[in-house]
Amino acid sequence: MLTKKEVMESLQSLPDKFEAETAIERIVFLEKIRIGLEQSDAGQVVSKEEARKRLQKLH
Image (tube, rainbow, N blue to C red):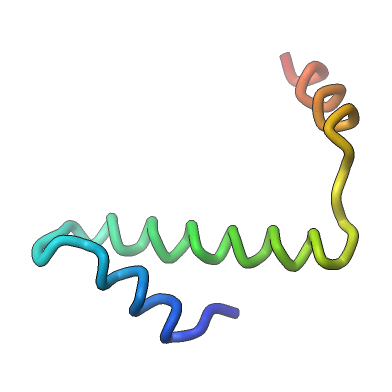
C-alpha cells in the first residue's frame, strides 16, 4: 500500500495546473513500482532469458 507521503511527494513535482488524469496515472505508476518491488523481494522474478522466451511467444 502506498503512503500519503509518497503520493504527496510525487504530486508536488507536477506543475501548478494539470489534468486529473495525470495525477491518477502517476499514482497508478507508483503502485505498480511498489508491487514490482514486493514481488522482487519475494523472489517472484524470472531470468532475462526466460523473459525473452516469453516475449518471443507473444510475437
